[in-house]
Image 1 (tube, helix red, strand yellow):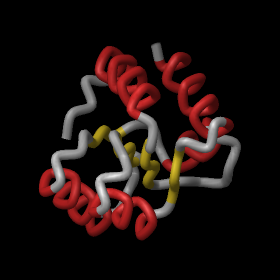
Image 2 (cartoon, helix red, strand yellow):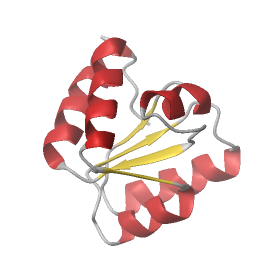
Image 3 (tube, helix red, strand yellow):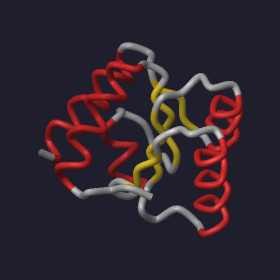
Length: 106
């Protein structure tokens, strides 16, 4: 199932439906421009708290997944700690597959 998550992340990146970087993602959460936030399992405590609080406040699903190096690799970039999914369809599919893999609710 993890392979499906990797595939959907790569597709979403190529389609231009992902944003990365803590500040950009937090800004997108506030503007309700993302339908899912993916946070690496090795994010700092400060980043974890900040992103978790924003997602709860704005009712955006959040999942912990992989580590910063694998997240970056899945989207063809350097390491990434926070990814925001801008497209509802991609977010729905990613949630479905992530919940089967890790049960990653935060």
